[in-house]
Length: 312
Picture: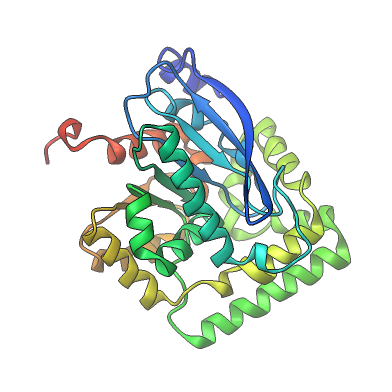
């Protein structure tokens, strides 16, 4: 943990413990991490990581969020310590979305029936949205709040989806032909991650080690079956968000000011009246990595019970 976080939150997170467990959905084993503190007065939180990451990628912010609640972080299919099955179905957004709802019910049962909040970063947000679009009523019954961190909202046109399908197929081919290291060398040079190059060397090394700990074939299958091209349409996503908001789920979209693409996407959510939009100044695509203290403050303020929120 950085010195800044230790100085600002050190006392609050004293006594927070971490351990590892697993659960099975349709024969697929998911590894997850759990952070617990002495106080568990607030509903639990489930964290969903981005492409080529794992539950460990939340290690800066999860202990801080766990000061007043149980925090779970999943390894998605084909990532980290979760299974990397040979079938294509297990990687599909629909299957992973169903697994999320199953785990959310499990988390609620472990926490006195309190429905968890879900925080999905990038691909993790894509999976949460697929679950929400596919089963909005089940999502509303199982999840209390949703935070989308720099997550795509689906495509507005067939042409955009076709371009994404070509990119996802090309990335899958590169992983198989060039191997994981060469692929990640190019992946880390994408403009999307430019702001991360200013992070301290030890943080960059930690992120890279996490990416290289994955399996190239499993990541290739992820592109093919859970890539951006596989998302529901923009129209369906926005409609489903409005539906779950009406059903009592609170929704926040969070991104960094340096991420122009996702800042533009966040503006489209202004048409969904009950979705809160938060842009963290000076951060790029991965807010919880680049500005962890700001991320925690934004999320805690959003998830706070209504009685504890500051008045406008």
